[in-house]
Length: 167
Ligand code: UDP
Ligand code: MG
Image (cartoon, rainbow, N blue to C red; front, side):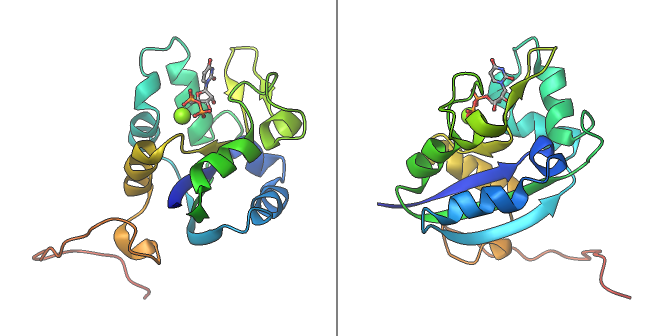
């Protein structure tokens, strides 16, 4: 069954110059990239993305991590991959959440680490199930940024919209 899944190359992945490597690993799946961008993550976006972790003692550090303040690299690469069993296949390639438990050849097993504050720096995020994928893709992308009609959309007329255009 075709599915879409959100992938984030987290700031540690970017700092460690793993982008090319990770995209190569993902390309082995033959899944299609249907959206991609570089994002400067606000506190609000980080908190919404990780809202299921809000009661964890390491929640503030987790937000610092996703925002890139820990790595002095304030950006994340966000992608949507689409294709047969995309969610499970990308999870498999990513490996377990805890990099020490992740299969050694998986992305997290190869490149992840646990910080002294106990946060798992595990290089990438990948959606865990279809429900999470829908919530996360809608959180990170607008409909026009995704080149396939993956979820229903509606038209909205916005009056007096101020937007930045190239000068
Ligand atoms: N995390 C952590 N310690 C934990 C559990 C999670 O630092 O004990 C971090 C880790 O970076 C993980 C993120 O919180 O990727 C989200 O956790 P989740 O359980 O959703 O794992 P994932 O879906 O990323 O495998
Ligand atoms: Mg998760």
